Length: 337
Length: 113
Image 1 (cartoon, each protein chain N blue to C red):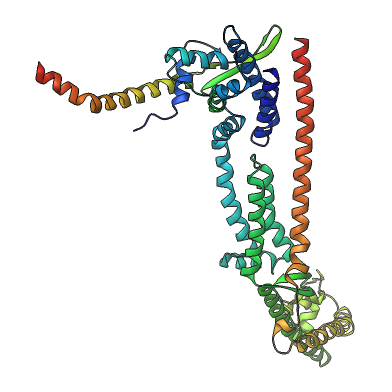
Image 2 (image 1 turned 30 degrees about the horizontal axis):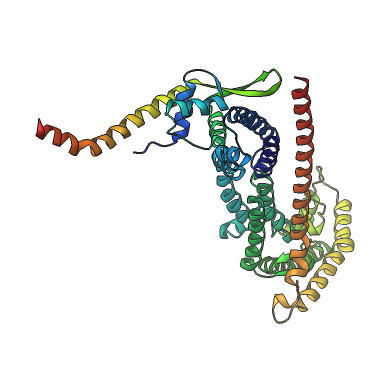
């Protein structure tokens, strides 16, 4: 009978593993062990004799008891069930699958977000929730959800494209590639206008245009041109002298514009023109489409999945260690008692 | 209307007598019910666990000489209020069942009388 009790406790521990936390599990096992020992004493009183099968039958199978504990802790899983859809909707919003969110992204970041970042944002909530889940069965389901969310993201957003450091990014979604290309095209127009303005300004100054001389004598100076793409007129108004520069200083400022800034703008413009010219049939012919598995799934998603599983194993190992230490302490206390 | 959480109610009913450990709770339920309730004793522990989590009972470990320590449960104020509620539900439920099942018998007795 003692062997039957030991077997029962081992089976129950196996069934309860993952359903209860380590200290809770130890407490339940200790309590049930005490109950079984008392039950054994009662059932072994003569003339009765109890078989191990009778003991287990009377107490309930380990599987049934474990299921009972799962049902008892089910209400505590409720918050997770509520959090999951919120995390899902939140991550989809962040990714930009909800239409108006794209506009918000644009206004905050001034452009699309790199694809690996999107994947991280979309994937991480599921990984975190799966690590939080107490029942082992929930974990593979949540990891499956994460993979499904990733695939849905890719399918809904279109294929991904390697745009070769366009806008500081490498792999972006199809629609974001289009956005970036459109913005670059718009910037080329702005650059052209800037050069025209600076040319006109220099010509006006050389000709002794009173307006240009007046302006430079009060607000001379230049701003680095790439920062003034959206506001082409600012390049001569941003840097304030504080005091009115004399005619010589103003003339030097114009010369600097002529010598340094104009060639730089021209070079950028020519580079941009050549780049746009290479896009012939459609903007997408320029960017290289990434193989669905080669560039995306194998990369960030599987790296995250691997990290999540490694983290999960580590957590399990630490839990096991704590459990072993806790159990050792419990046994020592019982023996000394 | 339904009388839900039967085992919870039975445990709270027994704990009204005072603090008890799991084995004693199961024995008292069987004794008081005249051996009518023969549930797997192990099922008591998930129930106690749930009651403890919801604050209806409080538990503490009591050491025993030469034996493993026992976890002793006692009812909290919230548990007492819950027991009162369960009793009301049970009276209502039992009264309703009685009214339906006993009605023909009562009518026959009235006819004989």
